[in-house]
Every structure is written in structure tokens, then in C-alpha cells.
Image (cartoon, rainbow, N blue to C red; front, side, top):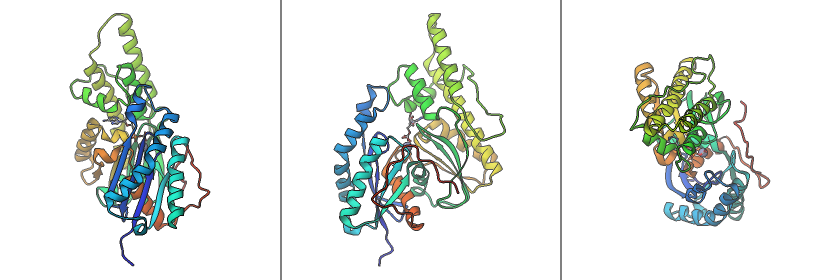
Length: 340
Ligand code: KG4
Ligand code: ZN
């Protein structure tokens, strides 16, 4: 039998329908991503019912494209992997149903994958992983520091007490009149401005690894509303730069502290907000200055947002541990990391 293990991976937890073929958990043979973002923009956020309808339209096409691009057939595959949570239940169910049907029709095992584990394992598509490692997971729904003693072991040592970092970006973007999701644009504006408004750095000095972004969001909204009432114009570039400086300083300070308390070989920054240039630059500079032996892995932009390649990378570990699911597998919208 050949050493090559090919997994067909399916992701549909939010607003991206994605299917990939991954070799041995580390090599991308194909990674098709059909984004629905333009359909949600005018609503200022993802509309679950609209998301499900798009997934239904796209899923079969994406499966075909992923197999074609990888130049493989179902006979070449070892297993089918699918995101079963966390995410929007209706959206998850489309990917789950497609994965079950494909697995059943082709006699393949089904591997259930946690979306957030997928974001972390995107790093293995870039570099070999070395344990123990720390992962800073920053997305639209999550902000967590995860300690991994070994493959497949996740210990949350800190998390947000209220809003996720990406959520704060999107809410502040709405106040600035930017379209959803606004993280990328705020990042862009921030690079043309300066930190002049001195927003709070929540929980930065506290002796834990938790975060809070709702106070920053309120401070931002109050400042803009008060200025509006007084008829004062605010500098949007400086506002963006000040907001971003606060988010980035808190994320970097707490992450570096965690890597000192839990000595790790690698730090992975993952999730949609890992695309942030300000965060990438400051994390890298601080590591160079304070922990020069720590290896930083930040996936390329296309692997930071939701995609099925990362699900295939995480599925490889599940398969090695014989974590398979039956046809009764259900979606779990609030799936958390399993306690170890
Ligand atoms: O991981 P992801 O694609 O979806 C979730 O699982 O949530 O993350 C999406 C989030 C959005 O909140 C978006 O505004 C944010 O990632 N984001 C960014 C940047 N690019 C995307 N936030 C800050 N800076 C960016 N460059
Ligand atoms: Zn995600």
C-alpha cells in the first residue's frame, strides 16, 4: 500500500463553501473556496438562511472542482473530513450532509473536525509543527490562547470574556460606515494614521491570559457619537490606527506573556484576524526582541480565512488517533475543544 494518504475535506461553517484534497496532512493538492461575502455585505453581517442556500448551490460544484484540480478520483481517497462545529447550524448541516453522502457512496470513513482546530492546523500546511506550542486563535467568533502539549491536545489557557477581536473590528467598522467584514479595511486605514486617541488596553496588566474587547468598542462608539453631536470631524485614519494599536498591543502582550509562562517551541497565530498586518508586524518584532528562540508561524492570507485545506490538515491528526464518526454525526454549533 502506498504511503500517500489523501483526504477530501469539506468546510461550510459560515460564509465560505470550501472543499480541498490534502496529502498526508501537510500538502495541498487543491483548495476550492467559494465566498458568499458579496451576498451578505448589504445586510452588514452573515445572514444564516442566505448562507445555507449558497452552500446548497455550491457544495457539489466545489467537490467536483477539488477532485478535478487535485487530479484524483474517489478511489484514491483514504477518508472524507468535515467541519461539524462551531458555526452556523444550517450552514454546517449542508457540508455535513454532503460529506456523509460522499463517504457512504464511496465506502470511505468520515472524520469529524473542529473548525478552530482547523485554523490552528493551517500552520502545518506551511511548516512542520514542533510541540509544545502555543496558538493565538483570533477570528470573528473567537479569541483564545491555546496550549498544545502534543498533536490533537488543546488546552485553552485564556479567552475573551465578551467580544472576539474580529467582532470588535466589524462593529467599529460599521460605526465608520465601512462594509462588512471591515477588519481588512481598518488595517489598511490604520497604516495611514497614528495612535492619537489613546483607547484603553483592557486587562493588559491582569494576571491571567484572558481578553476583553467590549470596553474598547464602547470607548470608540462614545468618542465618535460625542464628536458627531458637537459637529466635530474625526480623522478616520487616526481612529483606525488608535483602535488597532489597542487591539494589537493587548493581543501581543498577553500572548508573549503566555509563551514565557508556558515555555513553547512555536507560536501559531491563526484565524481571520491573523491576516492583520499590524498584528503580524508587532508580534514578529516583539518575539525577536524578547523571545528570539521562539518560532513564529503565521499562515499566508489565503489560509487565515475559512478554507477546507486547514480542515484536511486537522483531519490527518484525527485519523491517526482513529477518531472517526458514524452516519449519526450531527452539527454542533457551539462545539468547544475537548477537555484533555
Ligand atoms: O476566521 P474567519 O475567516 O471567520 C470566522 O471563523 O470568524 O474570521 C473573520 C474575521 C472577521 O471578523 C474579519 O473582519 C476579520 O476576520 N479580519 C481581519 C482582517 N482580515 C479579516 N481583522 C483584522 N485585520 C484584518 N486584516
Ligand atoms: Zn473561521
